Length: 470
Ligand code: UGA
Image: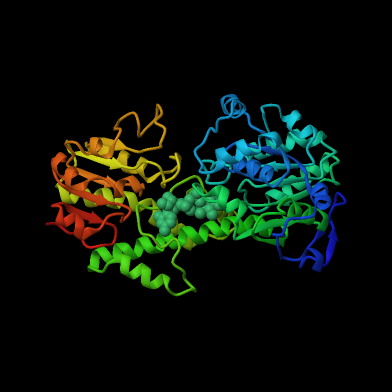
């Protein structure tokens, strides 16, 4: 592996291209011989039973490895041990059930580490008030590992700022664990298709400082249908943040273009489709809407901006991307307010609450901002979502939840389509027209056909497309 330098603490830092034997390669698709299979199976401890940890654990078990998943939340582990899955993620429950002989769940960190050769860190890294990533949970795991001298490698999958690997390396060295390899193996899976993304990734990024660890982590993914890309640890850490920044930038760009469309009478669906036909730009992540949400884009874009600012460079483009996104749901509430001539006393139905369909995840969902703004303006908010779990927090405490879209639309002065659940395309909109007080729809995800909605008698507003009415 390229030129290599000796790091204080005795660890060999290697930079540059990896040797031919382990250079960027496609993971083997053919079934390995039984003898090889046996040598490749590893014992893995996964810390964190959230979206990332559970998918990682289940997929590694599917690949034939023995996996113990450890979490600090007793109800979560109990549920898993009873055969349940504490989150909604398609295919995950089946995969866990299929591999139950190779999967264990525990609250006990020592038990998880005892037999493990490799430890995966998949804990969350929420933003601190300063916009930095809170690494306390990551370092709590590293603390547990300080006497685990039998380990072959520690791998961080949690999204962390550039430089975290160096800090962990130092902590391991100080605990006399110089021989334990370190890898950054960021995840690029999207909720709702995380299992498929893990097993058929665009790439598996493996950032290490030594060949042995790079090879070990690449082999761990043997059977995964995707290219393994090797690099140093800081580059792997930045690749993750950079990829999410690039996707967030595309979304904010198309949302800005949509606003220009609204001002000029152009139609974003034509504009975005034609722009995306240029392969240099691409058609993915070109859907105008109410802005991106979820546990990743908002947090990671702010974390990259903070990282950059902390290093003396204000990342201006990213600052604009974030501002555009924060403005997006508020701007559309304002449009609705203008259309209704005020929101006080008006009943508004929110259709879809999760940050995107096929998930129960409400983290940073635009619905939270939209409900908050509507309530602050004095509106009455009714809502529907097929999967979100209401809790004793906003937006649930001040809104009424209804079992069906039609029930939520009953007596409403307006409806906002916040999440593009397929069920919403199947609503009998002709009937919906009769149950609403005012037939006004703001389609925040451009899910429905404007002409059809106008034909049914609605005033139909959407994002970046001309408003139509009968
Ligand atoms: C995202 C990335 O897509 C994954 O590659 C990454 O691994 C993950 O973050 C992460 O860092 O863990 P996720 O947050 O699950 O995955 O969801 P996406 O499907 O990417 O959607 C994010 C948000 O962008 C959603 O609110 C969605 O509605 C919005 N979006 C997406 C748009 O507004 N327009 C689009 O064209 C695409």
